[in-house]
Image (cartoon, rainbow, N blue to C red; front, side):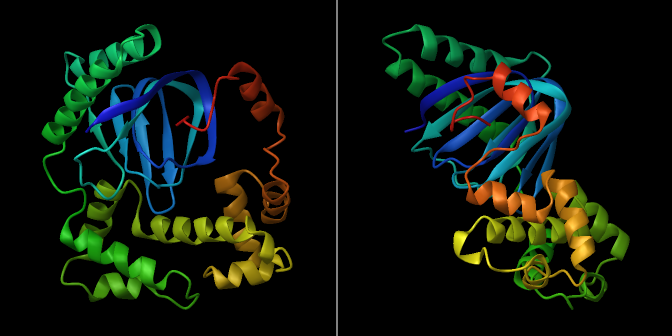
Length: 270
C-alpha cells in the first residue's frame, strides 16, 4: 500500500499536453508558477506548492515563463480524496526533501522496493496532515453539482441559481473561487469547453459542424465559443479536431522547441 511506482522530474517546461493517470499523482513545484487545468477545476501553483491528483483526472499544465518540478505516481493508496487539491510545504521544506530522496533512490538504487513503500507512506502522511479540512464545503459542492447537471443547457442561468441560495452572491462567488481556484462562471465555461474538447476528439463526431458542437456544449454563440476555445486550448475548434483525430501534437514552434528540450517526457508526465 502507498507504493511509489514512478518518480521523475521536469526541467524548465512551459506546457504539458492533456493526459491522465490511472494511479495517484503527486507534483512538487520547485520553481516558476502556472496553472493545472482539469475538466472541472483550475489550480494555480507556485514554488513550494504540492498538487495531489486522484486517478483518472484529465489535466494539462501551462506556465507562461516555465516551471520545474518533481512528480511521482502512487499505487494502492489509502487516500479517499475525490478531487485534485493543493497543499504547501513547510518552512523547513521537509516534503521537498522526501520528494528528492524518493527521486534519488528510485533512479539510483537497485534495491528500491522497500524504500518506495516507505517514502510513499511518508508522503501520504504529510498529505493527510496538511489537508485537514474537506476539499469542498457543502455549499460549494451544491453549486458545483448544479453546474455539472446543467452546463449543457444554453438557457441555464447560473446567476439566477446563485441568487436563489441563502447566502449573498458576493460571498458565494468568493468562497467558490477560494476552494475551486476559479469563479462559478469560469467553472461553467471550463466545463463546457472541456466537453467540447472531448466531443471534437471523438472520431464519430467528425461530421458535426462547429455551431452544432457549441450548441450541445451549452454555447449560444459559435463565434464566442470559438474564441473561448482557442483561448483555453491554443487552437481553433476545427484545427483542434483535425489534430486530435490525426493523433498529431500541436505544431507551434514553441511546442516543437519544448519537445526537443524535454525528450524524456512520457505518459507519466505531469
